[in-house]
Image (cartoon, rainbow, N blue to C red; front, side):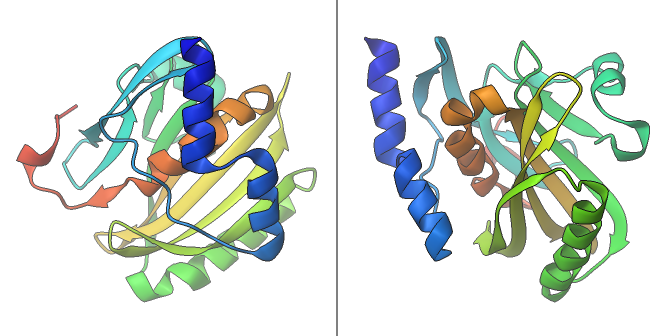
Length: 210
């Protein structure tokens, strides 16, 4: 009963699949509701959502408290060396991931849209089998950010990816949510809400340090 109730809560907060498909067709975007302080049962597991800082305190994000930082050995197995993020939060099964990667590209906030266009073109060339859902610009934490969502084939499954690109301290930062295709119905909108919760340059007292 609780699982069913929480599925109804998620649908009311984030919209159902048909509603989201209609928004994608119309190119509409709407703010994601805040997960902070919420407790939801997803796929039979209890998730409490709270704000956490990335190391250095330059940004924070609302995540499930069940997520932990992925160890280096697991990260080496799951991510190619040339694209391995420096910080990856993951669930116990390592099937749901939220990653941060500060790139070496120097940009200003006004450059984000142009930079994302270049990155998107590179991704589409390198991932010809990907299925693309949507892309665009929005504001997150007071900064302009670019985002795009796509499905890519992996060794034994398809992966849903939602990537957010922004400027942080004069450099481009990539924040990515991914999950297996079979988990999309449960986690897609929650992933969008987690990335939309990002705040930048917060003082230490506003969240729990990692």
